[in-house]
Length: 82
Image (cartoon, rainbow, N blue to C red; front, top):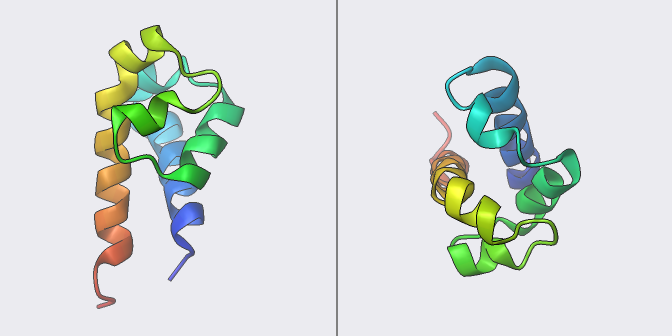
C-alpha cells in the first residue's frame, strides 16, 4: 500500500490528467499548492485556507470539491487491504 501522501498526490494528479470533468476545478491550483494540500491533508475549509496561495476566491470556488476529493482518498487509505 502506498503512503497516504503519495496516494493523495497521485489521486490529485490523476484527477487533473485523466478525469476531464474535474480538470476545471483543479486548474487554478498550481503544483506547489497541490503538493502542500497533499502533505497537510486538510479536512476543513479553515485548514485549507491556511495553505499559502489558497485565498478566499480559490477557497470559495474550489474548496468543497478539493475537500471531497481528499476525503475520498482518506477513505481509500483507511480501507483494509483486500
